[in-house]
Length: 265
Image (cartoon, rainbow, N blue to C red):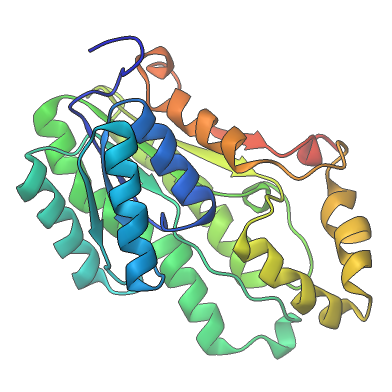
């Protein structure tokens, strides 16, 4: 294991990793030498191109699993398949997420259920199936990609805020349960990152608030971040990579902001 490839031989599974933050995290872990299992949505050829590119550029094995994060049986099979193929599971990053913006008294019940299932319950299922392998290995790193909305709230995002606050509690509980087994569990809480998920929120938020899309970016999204800058995918990915490394062995149960000062108010 070299300093350039500290995760050589390890396996990382990253949910929601075919685009945006998840893909950035998968890339960072592959750069550090980890084999990677991608998961997420997208056109089949684009996903396959991404898989091949990561493998070729970084000299690691990259697999793809299309498991639906709203289905516990699919999640169980994804974890089992990864462990069967690679013989181990060292790093689990729960990143899959969806969003919907609406006043709570108009919030579609089906959207609430879907957001809680994918943004919170899926992490419970991935963790419960991953932990036995990590315990056998005597090593594991779990990172849950939460949000500044795990720490504070915003109007019209009741399901998302509830799910992300739930992720914060789940993170702490898991960390305490496995603290003596060389397994850490942390959450990172990005502010607004200009990803497809955030871009999709802009018109929805504009409609909900009755303002223009430009005003949403300037006066709603970035108004919360004192830096007045979007957090970059690369910054979040580097943070996750650090938490997966040996240097972060004593960081566990932490819910860590990376949000341009948003929650310092």
